[in-house]
Length: 143
Image 1: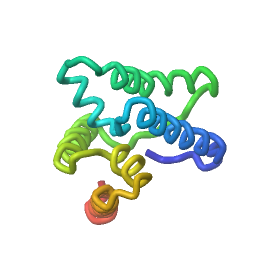
Image 2: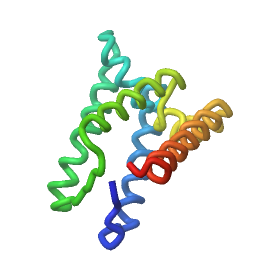
Image 3: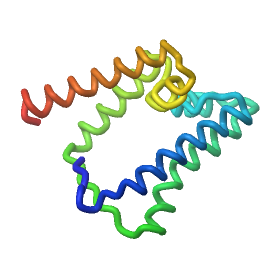
Image 4: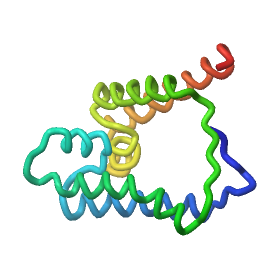
């Protein structure tokens, strides 16, 4: 994926970050839950009472890009990976989220905001792994 730096506006990035922070803060304030997407999605896959906030949170994640598209118009995205690569990457991210007991939103957004040492280690670990993967794939293997 490449960013069109000419079309990049810090305002939309700031607004998106503020909305993520607001949603995470409201979920914690009103429900006492961390806005970790892997945990919310995992709870939805195990039906039980009290999953309403998870369903609404995931629905918001799925509907937000469509709403943005309606308001902002066409968005150009260029993905430089094939379907198989995207599926393998998705499975590895899911596996890593379970292995690390959380995902980027749970550890990186909510955990760091709560000054969790465990979340700091997890965030540094998955960022380092991401950097290493990009370096190996792009610069050593030329994929």
